[in-house]
Length: 308
Length: 308
Image (cartoon, rainbow over all chains, first blue to last red; front, top):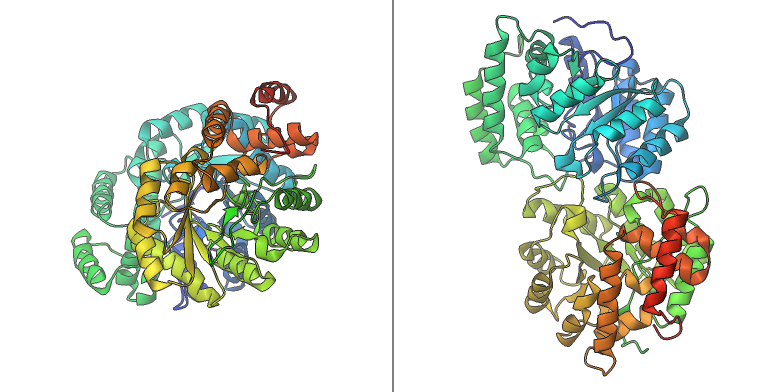
């Protein structure tokens, strides 16, 4: 697994980290750091804490800051951390952004404030301006985050265009987790290479890779980082068609589960660490019985921790 | 305007407060307290800061705590404050709940965590348990808050039934802002009088009043508290049919606007204080031109600040 040298935007795989919890449902700093180190050792470009897959908005501002500090204290290089800073309240997003800058993180991933719905493009632009102008730091690299099926607040192309015109050096990329391939391709056509476009939906990675996308912030990369890397970085290599079929089968199977609890179940199965099963409400952890079934079914996918 | 003595749940009108802002988009504590005092003087039972109309989740934990403290410091009796404690992150909801208890607030209004969607009933129940068990205080009065068109996370009757069985002394009421009359009537039939049911949709207040609802947490009550009071407390009084038609006409007109900016525009028009126009992103304030139009159109409703 190789990584290309990032110019300004990230290259390679930056997994959307699952967040391991202690028995009291606090963040398990030691396990999270070990997970990051193992992903970096597997060739990942960096890691992305507190995205959607990582239950990010389920954690308080204080918990999120402390957890990022704990990663750095436990040896994860800050330049290899992309901090997901999305909150309902902009002062908290701004505080997380300032904190990311203070520790020297690679950058920040931000979706629009997600409580109020049917907001206008102008309101979304104002929200990003609040954070970018508030941080007022030339080092800030911001990635726009589009995941309307969860946030309820889509990012239009007009918003992306306006923000990248207003802040050409700050806005470096877009993470499109909308899972609508035509939208992703249209984004890529409209904005690459001025902006980097990354897709969250792993089956779309080869096509995006062919069009110049050079990385991914991916949930599946928590446990198959090399495979996800091949999908986007080597879309036409001999083995990639097979990798693509494996990922599609995996996602079809996961569709029968609530995603984050199932991904944590896979981590528990692959590592033997049952603590991975814990989730914070409003998610519900797999029961013993569900976990046993998942562990059995997982065998069919023959995940190889050395090559996948 | 009279208020009945509340047994455990609130009685009368507790407006869903609009949140006035300073030029830097911080909460204007002085104006908010003055607004509360004026509503209490108009006969409101209490006030409800930080609901949906009040852009509650747009403010940080720290801002929300400070603003509630500032209300008390400026003479608003804590027992007449119902604190909306809803956040995406449960530790922040718990912190707001503990703070409300510490200052002696009447109670707390809580919607489920609103970032993740398609969560299960069990996950929602677990979320409420996290807060109620975490607070662990016999004085806590909690109101469940159903507003799925904004939160994206509906409360089912099964959730309400389970929570009120688990915590019969803590869960005292439900605020139903779903704006589906049949749902509100079904909730009332299923749970009153064990739980108090309040509807957010003002045109449904008379029918709920006839079925025993004794109050409202209402957005329109920011500027027509007496009229809203009559709708629910005197649904069959001679003037109420006329009041109901006026409220329906007002809402039909407001349907052409983004609600909170328009309600703030009405406050600005009625008080002459232009500062009321400010909103926090992702909302967008009325432009000068829009405000001028709103002010003109508002005249048609002949709002009387002494009797409405």
